[in-house]
Length: 315
Image (cartoon, rainbow, N blue to C red; front, side, top):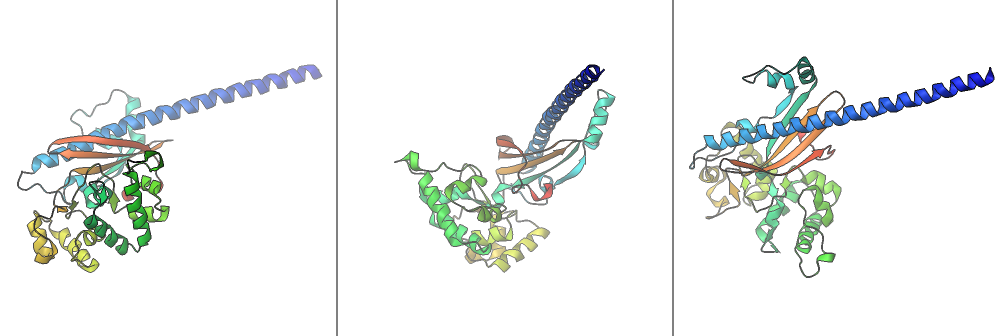
């Protein structure tokens, strides 16, 4: 009888272990399936954002190409059920009831940000050397944010070292993202406070005065005080500037020099955020796109959870 009881206990233990392994495999498979579905849905959301930016470019003419915060692309997409988007399509029917149930459980949100509303770190380098005008703009931004100027020196020196060709083995890699500026020795606290105001783009870019924050406007226009920059942002909320001449009138004739190409009223680089929430899955995706007239191409994409880099509307 004792042997029989031991046998039953052993069989029950083995059966419970096998059942647990099967349940665990099923859960892993379900989670992977949900993540794959989420990524495909976010690809569709990115294509949707590209269509919005393309239609915005088509609505502009060659003489009035402006980008401002009252345009459709600048309106954040608040979290909503996927089914509400599908029902708005011309063919709102789905393939099965399972698709309908899945769409009821999926929530999508997103946002398009103007990357030329920020100071471009790439502007600091000109012909392999630090550009004094760009360095002065960054110094004013550091001042507005109460950041230690020593950190700007570290950033500038690091960029120069990354450009060094004589000894590549001892030179840091050239950053391609704002978070990678830590490679140059910039502290995490400085990066966290700089992130909403700077970007790293593949080419030098002007600041879009229609979308820049008060701090970035202050940094990019020497003649402005921070109070003046805040006043301009309030003025801009009522009507955007259709040309740099209009902006110059608002700022004052002495604020901008002839041939100044550090500011503009339109944008070529945008950041697209997407966030998809399912029953057991939460996926965020960030993409940088470049728009040349009506052509919108994706420069890079990354998926994951970024605790310190998430778009404010997606947190």
